[in-house]
Image 1: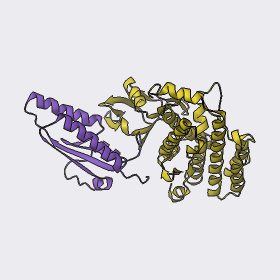
Image 2: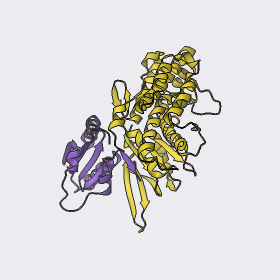
Image 3: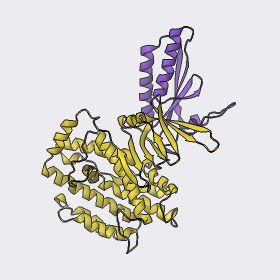
Image 4: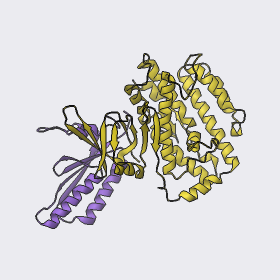
Length: 314
Length: 110
């Protein structure tokens, strides 16, 4: 899988030439500028404009090479993603394995996912010198099987209030305020990357471990991105405090900084440091091993590499 | 920019083009390089950037394999160096192409 992230906001035509993606931009002076990007190198591509046209061949190749692709609707919110349909050779076998995952495995997996999520939230609060991080840390230690005490909701209540110092702040999916729209945007990117990784590994994202929503095609994705959400929160808080304290709406420079998160080496995983998009891949790979061997201890969880955020100048 | 150890792989070649068969082989080689994602720096000089030395070594192996299978005559050289060394390359006449300027960036914005 590739290592480049492409963010398209200009009007352009997308074609394929020699198995490379050819991006044709029309300049004002009627000159065409063609840029060639090798599809093998692309990890994530974000079409952040509705003014583009793309050939069928290009879509087919993006799918075949397992590129995470995200499209935008008219309101510039992420709306749809491409995921490979039948590329994995052991698709039926994987589906059968997924269906037969034991309740015990699910219970422990969900417990550990929530543990990891809360502890990453706690690291985020610690980074901003909020005293509530202690509370979250102790919460994360006592998460039960299947999170039966609902510690996730309890931590969220403390976390959002403390992080954005705003009593009236409410985390909502449909909200138009700057904080919520930044969060929604970067979660959508995260979700697309996770969906791609799962799909490429042969998982069917409909069978979740905790999320069982009958209307949701990405239950498993929504399960597995939980530990990664805090990375977005921390990044967004930094952007809001430094560069965009005056911004009211999501504009292109903000979006670019949000996309940039995928290429930052901000994750400590498996004893090393890795970029966010690579870390998601590692996480899915290990999750798959855990599922196949029915051994919960094989899952490796990500934690935040605070040093990067300290050194990063925005 | 993260601490990616980007590496360049450069291929320089002379292939015979006298007979029809030779020209066909030449074109095949050119197409194959384009498919692999190499870009033309100059005629008969192609380069590609890789995310790590390991990826570059793997790329080198792949190219070698398909050359050895199909080409017997001519002269092909391959060179691997770091992105910094590439950036230090002096262009005396002419200029760097748009793609060349874009390549080393991990985040492509348009």
